[in-house]
Image (cartoon, rainbow, N blue to C red; front, side, top):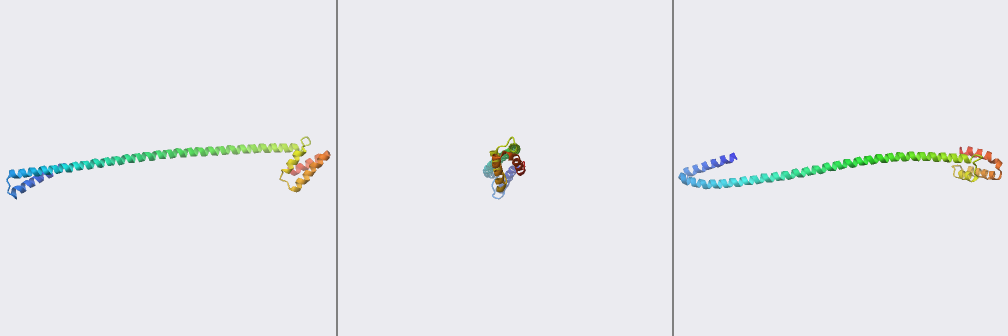
Length: 182
């Protein structure tokens, strides 16, 4: 602002001096001419100052809008990062839960399989005793075993022979225990 005042004063003095010396005008005439020119210069300076204030205000508004947009974008990004962290944590919890369920199921299956094996072994072992012998169940056990066709045929014939001659039961049961590994 100070520079503008100095510029105006220098212009006035320069104009007044030029009019007085170059054109031979009296100081009163030069002053009237100078006053008109000064008024015009002051009007132009006011216009320039108003335009500068408008531009500064507009730039400040734009910068404030840009800052608000940047702040909003940063907030959205922070929210997205927080949501992603929550989702990752939930996925980790679900994965851990699934792993624990798989372990529990595996243990349960192993326990049930062990119980079934024990029941099967106990049941088949009981079938291969004199008191627990049941020809039909022993035949079923032989037919579902991993024995060769020859062994199945021989053992099946032995069971049929025991039906006709119960005295062969003990020897047949011993042979079945050996072959079946029980």
